[in-house]
Image 1 (tube, rainbow, N blue to C red):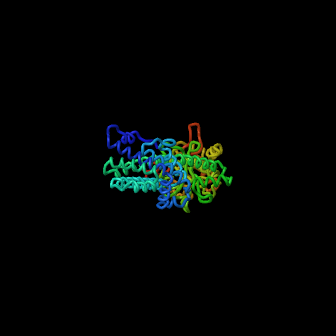
Image 2: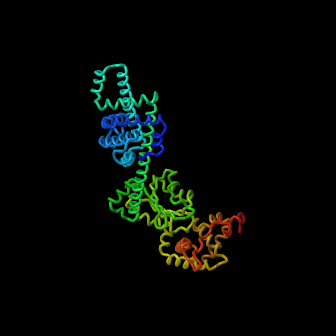
Image 3: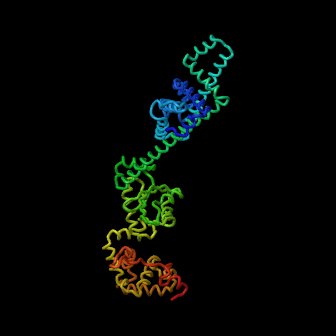
Length: 475
């Protein structure tokens, strides 16, 4: 962590006598404790182990790792606290390394911050012990305890330590009665600043790791879509990266990149507890969706009614290695839908269209052969096409078709007869009915010199010959 100019200036502002005394006291404390850094580290590591199961287990962070990181952080903090020059690197180096390493070890940030607080608490305890010991020593001398008694105290603590103790006591007495409170505030200010630098490094490392994971996840998803999931190693790696089983219920959905549609459909599916993963691919969005039993219909309903996307859905498959084949079927389902329509279709529901869309010349020939004469009849064309579609959709029942068309059943029969007359085919012939049904499905996929041919309309269309404006009137 780098020291801010504000905090450094606050400790050394010229002309401020109390700040100068506090600075000298901090320096004396730091000089006294730095030589004891290994003992301080031992106490901090023991305290962290006593208060954190995550560290005590040694699973993510070994004892040696914790010792090394604690020692580096404590040394930098003491040097920074006392205004001493850093012994190696800048003051924030240890905090940044802690954040990076703990993020890579998946130690929760709250756990690391708690360890910093425990370390700060122990460091303050050690400083308080030094303050009390040095004051006690000076008090004994002031009371005339004599050189022999003072010599025994110095012998127990070491001559150099006794000298440092006198320096600490001198500065503590000069600083006034609130010395310990002031020092405690300075300690926690230092720990807080180091904690912020550590947390920032932790979060940056997390973002970098997530970026690398996303890159790997995308690459493996692309690999299974390209058909490389047949390699067991690729399939296993993709399953691990996506966080899903190798064997389960899946579909592939391909959605057109429509400006009116969201970049992917994951949020809508997430809201309904359906897992998915999406990526842009060849001008479209491809997604793999994991389904529970019976969710295929739910998914299709969400695609149709909760998103503006035009999308095709593959049949279900149960192994990730089959994702490449499923992608091709989903793309074919999408190709059967009008661009920008906002419709969604399952491949199994669009089998005739899927066959026809891949062979446009055959689709055009089916239309020309089975409905060419109807298309050329401009005056009756729309009414005949719409009636034919509804009649076929209702099992060739004139009565049920008449209900949807809001007309008399004889009107339906007359129109079907007119189609049979124009096309030269019998309405009773199964082959003729099949041809008409295929031609109606091929109609939106066929083109003329003026562009795509229009699809037949339904009774809800206001321009439909027997639409809302004419409902209730029988012919």
